[in-house]
Length: 130
Picture 1 (cartoon, rainbow, N blue to C red):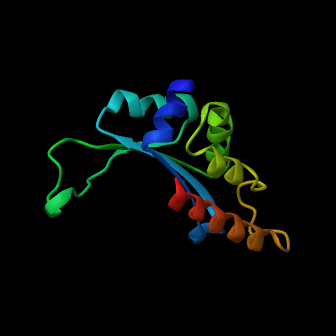
Picture 2 (cartoon, rainbow, N blue to C red):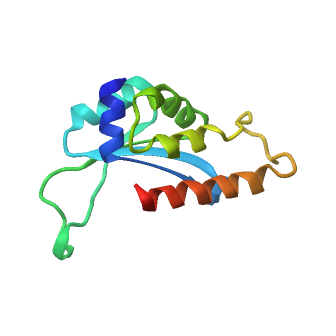
């Protein structure tokens, strides 16, 4: 877990996205597929090849892989890595404070969406500092 947390601290991303009621998404990308696969083995989620632009607008010549996980499993992955995080620890702590509801819950309790919106803004602000 310490290895994964260190890799995530340097190469990972987490965010709250409003498309699905401020759902948490956690991802890590890199050119070493075995390293990226370790995240899927530890936490689930998906690994896919990700095309990216580099300076000059050309696609990079190296293959780039991305692991992504969302919702409650994303929260669980952050909680597992939390003791080892340094750079992204404040963001992860905020993200872990989101209340989880069973999959298929169609409406959030009153005030929950606003709380998620506020936490998403705080996470975004911390990204600009780190």
